[in-house]
Length: 260
Image (tube, rainbow, N blue to C red; front, top):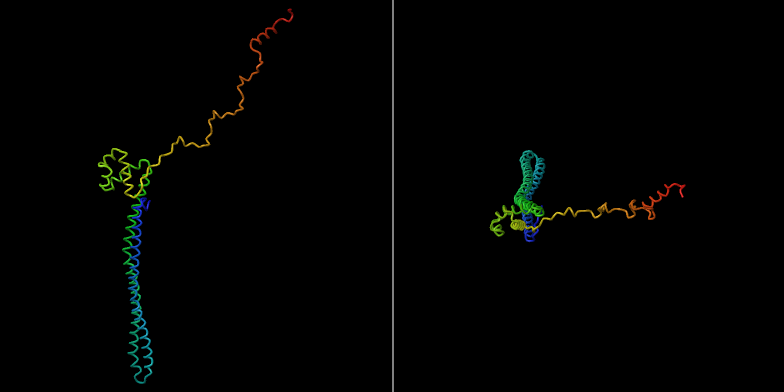
């Protein structure tokens, strides 16, 4: 997979979109945090209500306890004061619950404000970039393989706009079907250029006949020691008697010894 193009112009555009995507995400995250802080800022008022209610309840209970020692009317005066203190206690609890709810609400609103735009940006970037990476990676592999130009030309015919195809040849489909090498190569290069890739030619395979190790053994027919013995048929002394001489000697030996 290739995330970025090989041509500088296309690669710069891709990097620019990446920067814009990151900026978009950062802006919406900041906005979500800002909304959270604004909504959560209302907690301060709720906390003030909570503290005020607690203070009021405490003071009323103290006043009720003091007035309860008043002769004759102490018991009657304490009852309404105690009820007021209980109401202040309820106000204290309500302020605390309001502060907690405002904190949760601020977090939820801030999260929802940032969530949808961030998800749209991330999934949009993944859809476009992963799709490009798969197409570019496949095209790069095909361009390096023998016969891959035919498939690249087919991709060009099925994916490129008609204007680009017309610039290559007025009848690109017919020539592709006919196997015209020049048209096929032009279509493949056009498709690679459309993806921001540089034209690539397949690498020719090595000749197996030349793929021989340098330390290969020599021809056994020539691998013969220099001190090999000579042919035994030629290894005879130069002063050996000839056949006629041997016949003469045999005749001399066979003569009778008594004849003079």
